[in-house]
Image (tube, rainbow, N blue to C red; front, side, top):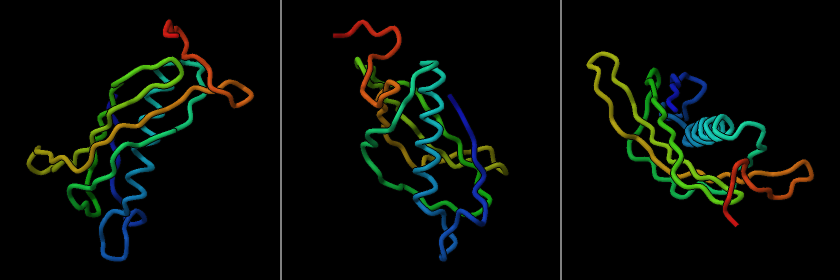
Length: 122
């Protein structure tokens, strides 16, 4: 799944760069949407984000492209790889700024782990 965000003034720190927390929020949200679309009706919560390393700074007006894909499936959990690129709209080029793995677990109405729909794993 692909998604895009524009970095606006309210996303910047006092030095004029994107706050890392906004990027992490977007990564979490976009990967949650991907998981929810892949497993309709499942209530997912985030349990892990494996590595947080910001490779490049991001300025106001940058268009970020988020690419999320399913990487691993367990009985009650699913992991997505998320890669983030900054798009240069003037040249059509892009640069990698961030990547991570986000793991979600499926919960029942009582908040207990439950098997993913269609899961055959024991």
